[in-house]
Length: 246
Image (cartoon, rainbow, N blue to C red):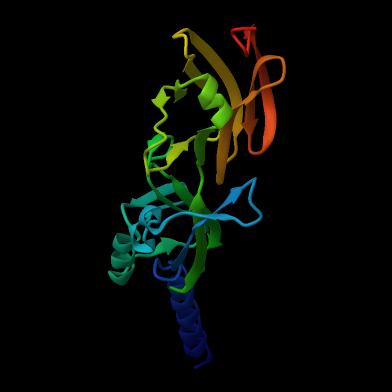
């Protein structure tokens, strides 16, 4: 009898060990809670600048990328990911990185914001769920160019390029650029018709709205001041006097 009971006990232990090694035990789920942040920094303002609603993505439109356990998974939208979860989607228990994004990464131009956010989670076993809270914010930069009345009086016509993109002061859209160094080129035409080319290099920061102002000094010779986020970053003294009749 003891031998029979011992054999039964071994069978139970063996069954339990087999169950623990089963695929259903070694997997879990991921639930994504997404939030979009509209605030971006603005150096000259006390408060943050808020992106307009028409540029803000819906949480359900965010692209989903999950990497971990030597695998990479992608869904075009958070809606598609949720549908997969409702269909029984599971992940092998392991650490994972969850990234949400919206827009074309690296793209530059009018109305081309890029949003991104990520977090790390540890997927549990036994079909339990890991909660991934991800805040998505704008990762590229906004740039705007202005000219002062003095500058416009000396240069009745002027045009600007940021890299290869033409600046349009009348556009109601916003110009988005990648963070880092960019060169601004100005072609300014005096009343006499002569052309002056001005070049200035500035460094853009991510998640920031920048303003560049071209101003003119009236003291002595004509001097152009390039003002970036409220500070003069470059001074260009022209070779001729401000008063042509002097």
